[in-house]
Amino acid sequence: MDGPGGTPPGPSPVRPEPNVTPDAAPPAVDPAAAQPLAMDSDAVPSPAVDSDAAPSPAVAVLPPELAGAARTLFGDRIELAAAYAELLATDGVLRGLIGPREAPRIWDRHLLNCAAVAERIPQGATVLDVGSGAGLPGLVLAIARPDLTVTLIEPLARRTSFLIEAVQHLGLAKMVRVFRGRADEAASGATGVGPLSGDVVTARAVAPLDRLSTWCLPLAVRGGRLIALKGASAADEVAEHAQTVARLGGGEPEVHRCGEGVIDPPTTVVEIVRERMVGPGRPKAAKRSGGGRSRRR
Image (cartoon, rainbow, N blue to C red; front, side, top):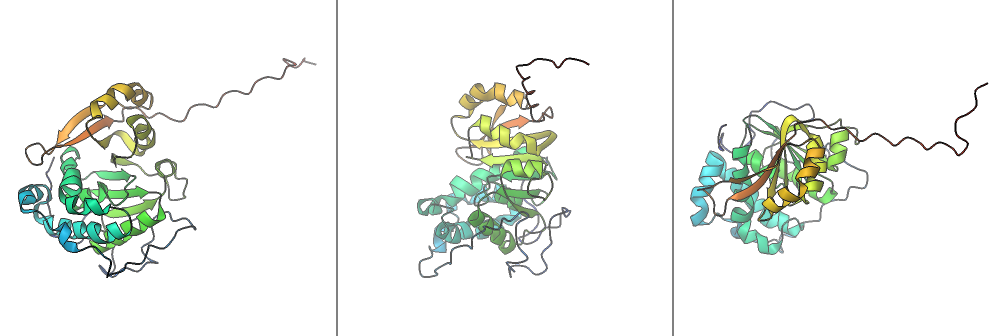
């Protein structure tokens, strides 16, 4: 498994996915050409940005004490990570995707925390990020690992609008796509895009492990895995929901610490391999009428 790092900032030469449209001209965003893969008719425009009220980009500057960890995790794509940090701290705050108090902590609590998960992802994997929000961890993984192909799955229009613009702004349209919809819609192809599946499904602070497995495991190929970013309660969740995971076709959940020796504290993840393909339950048979069997004639 290769570590983070890769080519300099900008579009990365990876194999195109069927629904990925390459950038015709970077950073200049054409809203009509940058729609998500599934966009409902009730989509609302993103709030206008008031430059006078915009937070200062200075809050997103990489703290010197974190520079070593950032270089280890992002390699020579650290400038691209810095551009994303600035976008989160300014436009992300204005749109309500990142809380104002989070802006000074973007590097340690968000970017480095997410980038550390890259060590659990195989080379050249396809990654589906469920409940991507502002792009955490999916967009961070795409920055740290240019060998990955990433789909950001997010149901809310204002968030998908931000994600589309961020992907264009960072020059990542060749390796990252945005799907507007729920995880179950992505898995079933209910939006008309076609069922999505990936080698790795990621999720961060979305739901307890039982519900998370219900949503995410159907998106993983057989032998693929769910990697859920969790906190101190990870071991408790594994103990509580292991039986539910098994019923959904998942193997025994494992707790891993990512980024040990690089970030403090390390990132805690629960990893579940999809061992069996479990389909929807069979519908119950209709009850017979009170008259019993019909008499043969």
